[in-house]
Length: 269
Image (cartoon, helix red, strand yellow):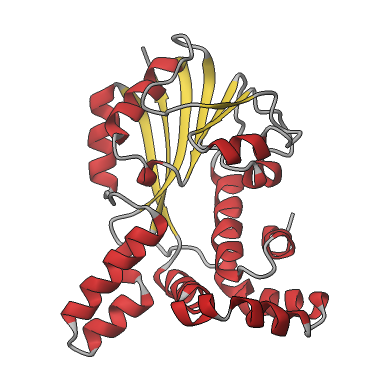
């Protein structure tokens, strides 16, 4: 499946979101292997990502702490059940799942250490935990952060990353070493961590993201929507696809680091 084309079709007016989600889908499809059931999707959101990723299996449980998202996800056919639930205090019994999956969720959880302990609790022996999160390089790979630093404007650079974190509700960024320490300290074994989202791809994402979310465009959103509507939808999608394809297919090269992490580990006990 060409995930980039699928995400552009789904999010035609949010190309930055389409790029990020497409990269995640490609990386996860390549790097996770089989996800055994019973399967929990922790932080399932509105189910749009799950509907693209879980094409070969059903998800036994999806949880999210946003009521509107849960209502939408409950209508997505890949989920057997979706519940409103706090990841730091799940109501599931011990050892109820063979797999816990979580895509770009833990950076939004202030009590993330408690959430990791909860994942360990609800996993069966030898169960797998698969998650993606932004890495410790997130800030320094942002295009506008780097641009402000080049201009000698440290104050503007710091202001930009604070605004970015607030917009995306990100609470922290951890390195592979920090994640390994947290997971092993909780009891997880066979910890595999790899980078994705190369710096160039991530910088391109930031340029598009800022363009489509800056205040000027927000104020003129109706005009922007009207202007975009003048371009035939198929043409617009094709243009974005051609522009983003190189970045969608780019992998982090050996010895380099990326803006995000794919983590796989198992519960041994």
